[in-house]
Image (tube, rainbow, N blue to C red; front, side, top):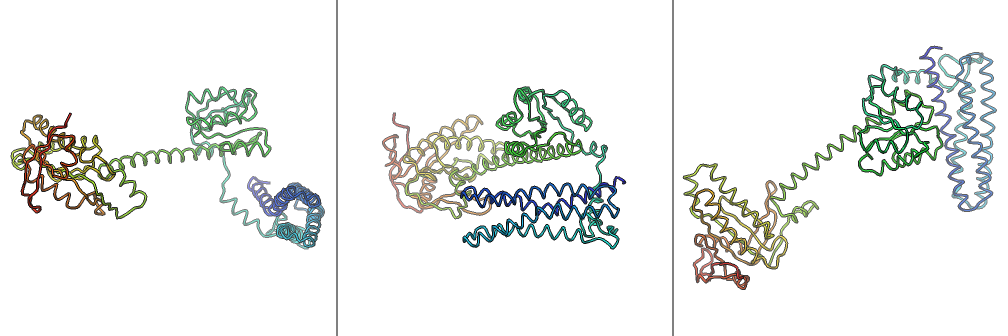
Length: 534
């Protein structure tokens, strides 16, 4: 038989295992669940019947494998062989199937008599699976021509015209050649961990032929030491080693943040299901029993490496996103208060709050228009940048909120967006620091710089305005009054209102200026803020 025909026969056999195996798997799996439930309720009679059904299911599974092997033998075309196959099919599968049906029907009868309605649905599924399998057997045995030979369009495996269908599937999946594997293998650095020298040598040679760079460790402890010193993309780890078993090595690797990202494929002669499940639960990428097929091993290595590459790419992208988020957060925090940013992140819109106790400061450079006309744009930008940077540092140091700058004007608020008991004192400290900063920066640039500052305390409304390039702003009579006090102030003096004076008089030397005509406010009693009282 040619290689394509052999592939087709193997595919047909796999298809039979799938079609016949599905109802058998239902019988076995469902009875195991029912047995567990019966044990919890100590129903010994039910357990006995379910055990018989379960045993019959296991026998069906065993017989299915044997019958598929018989059906795929090369000499199966002759009439006599097919007659043997039909006889075995009827006998070997029907006998345990009758047991499944018989005991299931008994359980159904007893469940109805005892009012155990909870069993009816599940046991009904057992009967349905048995009937499904019987139907498949009858269809397969009955579909032959008059001579007893299978027809060219049908397969004795399936009893239906499925050879063409399976053949089409196999044509779409091309056979893998050694050259194909080497061309498609992902070159990486792989650590082989095995206590047997022959196994390490064989795996190393195969992996090297596939284009990988290979490191070896003769035990669990040496593997852990090597992974701490060198970088690897994948670990092939033997389970049964004397110094430290592979499961313990796996657990240590997955507990170590430095190496837990490295995929681990377990390779072991131990193929019992508990070991496989525990290794996968502990973080193994895959589990391959010995002896392994080299083609399958190569494919699983490539699949694991590809998944690692995708995870690494995702992690790098996540790190990049986090870095960009930090940048955007920093930019946002330069525009809005941190507490306002957090409220916006939580979905709050239309943010507006009233603060009954706040202090507002306005400052403006004296003669800035004249300075701008005789200086270059670059020099003006440099002066304002140095000046406002110094103001920003003062605001941050005193826990005040910079509101905005307009040209050479600077506005700051105390007591918002978080309440601050001594907001007026903090703003007064800032004002004194601003006057000193203006003097020093003027000297630095060889210019005589002076500033007017106005301060007023009272209630304000603050919130977010705009949808594009939004800002955190404040409104109210307190804001307007502070602006007017700055406008009618004197160079290098800090003019404060009566309201602010009452809040700071115990901590600063203040000079009464007297009644002052304030635009839009009329006559106001104002003060000049002096130095702090020691």
